[in-house]
Amino acid sequence: MLGLLLSTLVLVGVPLASTGSSSDFSQHDPNLTVRTRTGTFVGDYNDTYPDVRQFKYVPYAKPPVGSLRWASPERLDSSSEVIDSTTYGPSCAQYVSAIPSVWGLNITGNLIVNYGQSLFDGRAAQNSAEDCLSLAIWTPANASGNGGGDEDDGKKKLLPVVIYLTGGGDQTGGVNIPTQLPSQWVHRSQRHIVVTTNYRVNIFSNPHAHVLDGNGNFGRQDQRAAVEWVAENIAAFGGDPAQMTLWGQSAGAIAADGYLFAFPEDPLVRAAITSSGSALVNFGSRDYAGANFTFVAKSLGCDFGDVTEANKKKELECMRRVPFQRISNFVGQYQDNSTLVDPSQPPITFSSQPDEKWVFANYTQRYLDGQVARIPAIIGTTAREGSALAYVPMASYTEGPSEATVVQGTLRFVCPGHASSVARDGLGLATHRYHWAGDFANLGPVPWLGAYHYSDLYMVFGSYGIAPGEVPPLEVATSEAMQDYFLDFVTDPGSLAGKGWPQYHAGAEGGGTLAQFGAHGKAVELVTGDSVEGACHIPGVEYNTRP
Image 1 (cartoon, rainbow, N blue to C red):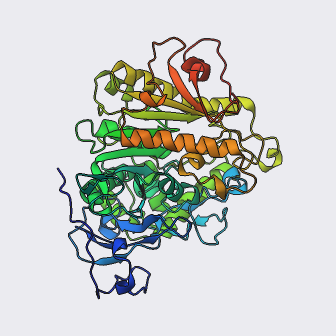
Image 2 (image 1 turned 60 degrees about the horizontal axis):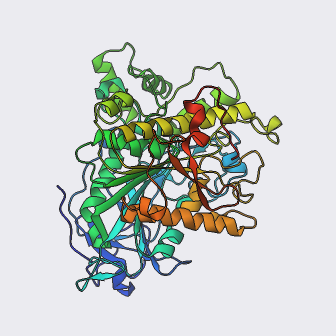
Image 3 (image 1 turned 180 degrees about the horizontal axis):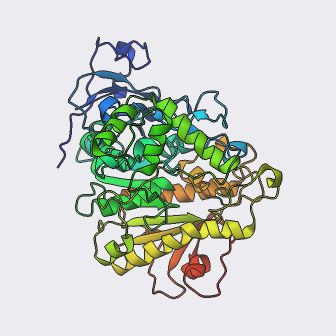
């Protein structure tokens, strides 16, 4: 479907595009210059791991600005432009909440980098913008257009590729998040490539404006555009487009799982990993009349009276002229006020919404109908998903949320993960389940956090060293175990059973087998499904948040 592009090409004496660098292009290592259909990208070597190449800014679609605000992403034109990829592009337009939370108070490196902006600023993120549809690529230093690593018949093999979708509840997220930079993992493996992706969020992704005639879920559309760009161009970086795995966490996992239903016949990827998220999670908007968008428009001066088709078009045209910061600030501050000041204030939300193209209303039925990509998957959850997701007033912050709240919030992820695994098993789709249960003090300095939602990412990305405090040997061993299992799966999705991680089979004794990481003083051990998710389907069984 998508053609492969030319391999690495050195161009000498061509000025860099105006992307924020004044480097002398002619001085660059030829191995750091990669030509694709959409441009020539100049990267660098990672400061900590010089055996890792990185291309931090790689546009994959046209900027969604002006008339392209609230429109489907458009494919980039062919270009010979030379682009400095040594610095990150902006994250997509988003808001920095003023509500104090554990994410800013205690958990290190989990938010987009905003270069000195307060973590509770209550304004648009200063390092976000609408011109944000870019991705970043990490490869072993020896990877190139003719592959990398071991040779086969005199040629280097093209490497398997992970395409990662960040989380953030459809409200925040982006490439430049310190704990989600994969340089350490690529350094350890030297056998795979990782791509991470910006995509539109909040009202810029999910306006649900009536005049758009159902076109929306633009973040989901951006994700597909990114996958298509990678499939077309990754060979130039040494990656194999036939060996791509889509991985997401939280909202990114919900999107990655939903992607398999949106493209059952043409997923372009051969495997998927979902960490703390499933298409079956009850998540998203239901605003088919576009009332929230109209409310924001009127509040920002785009008020054209009665609801008519002509007025709705004027509303959209007007809103496309409002600076994105004003829109982000109004939506974010209104949502903050609904939580902190006046809980009776009618809430507004802009999340993914069923449109029966990108997002579906009944995934269970689609499973029953077999309308899902027939590819292997890993499905994972954490032991205390709900601890970091619960709102905790500062007056009771030391004690944290009640255990009942934590359990309830955790089962919102564990039970859909279980249901997805059972449904996949019924279709004969290879599925491996994991449960992250590590409770390390440097990752969760507040005792009530435990193995919270997100904390497994420190393990797979190998970014646990960012967190302050001692790193115990078990933490390192657990990280390496998770990295190696994920890499085995990405390299050969059918290999895990032979590596000691059996497929999940719902009808097996004990409710199938899960790999549990970081519990009982062990990096990994096999446990029964019922011991983890029995509370989802066995009457009277209580969920254990601290196995």
